[in-house]
Length: 577
Image (tube, rainbow, N blue to C red; front, side):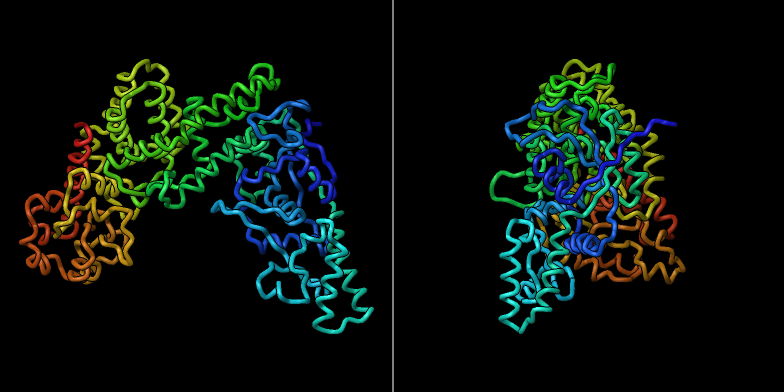
């Protein structure tokens, strides 16, 4: 018989909640923000009330001896013996309701989940204002398990009698229903407990096999779990940073117009800086204090590695570093999240920025320009689109031989040159522009190039960069993508396939009044009205071939793609100055 990876343990709900409260079972309140809607919590309690099964739980023994200490200043009653792999949302729901504690939502706001119960109809509902004022309901079932059971029952019956008559038979029935709800504390659960010897890869595989409908675990999830156990402040710092990045503030904050990161994304940045790794599988084992040769765990080894991560995370979350880096995509011509097709690419650029700043002491002017060239290249070519971790690991490996600032700058610039060759600009890029994808990397790189060239909007005196400012939030967009060959006009020519009509090369940036005025006219019809606004420079910026308004649509697209590629090349050249 093959080795069994788990053993089965039985729990009552009361025991589960008690062991979570004591810390025997680790339930990290922000391992993942609580994703269930309140109605799903209600459904869970309803299923239990009616005696239905609600699934297995999956725990993982942490493999460390009793009595070992946590990292940091905060302490719990004990460090958890068991970590939750599957059942996070269910156990959070149960613990939050039975203990009456708040959960943290995906927007990082705290909330009490309040479930109401009608003993007469034996119905559970998410409490709202009407239900809270309805005498037929116990408005918050949490109070039943908080030592106020009899007081709650008496208050409920008194309120009900104030509204209508209640005879002894009904009172007995109501009490019986309340007792059934209260007795959910004895509801049985089955848990599978995985041995501490099981690798994180096998744990993830077990999770997927038994819970195909769940959220697939990744290595960042495992590391966040470890942080919740051994370094709560670190995980709390990640969450606080992410929460503050979502709201504009009059004081210093992480808020910006490029990215509102999640904890696992910033964790990847910190890990990249700390251990020069993008793939987290080995990092997880290292942070558990595991000797990769003997397989044994060590408190000292774990503390040492967490100390490295702690220092790197503090540097990652430093607001001076964060906002200094955010000038990199701006320097590259990018103006906000609407131009970012890969958050991974943005964050990997942040890792390189931090390495250059901390480990090589590169001055900010040089570093910003170097990373702007790198970011433009990575964004345009989709460097981290396929297998991003493996691709970035290869980049980090190349840095191992770098010894000084000039070596760092020289390596990144050489990779950029090797990627953006003459063949790329003249052959590959025009071919990549033959797409109708509305969020194409090449389209946003073209807009970035217009910003770098300080181009004006077509038929306008306004700069593209000004009207792409993400701080502008009018009721209607100040800048619109206009079909140079309008859709209705192409339809009259028999071109109706959206993949042809919406080619990137058929779009130009216009102010919306001009876009409205042009409407569905043929280029040869509307062009004369705007000819006096079209300077040679504007035709260059907007890649308009000579006589474009009289060309066939097919010839126009082919020529404009080449011209757009030239504009991108020229815009990128500005980053070498």
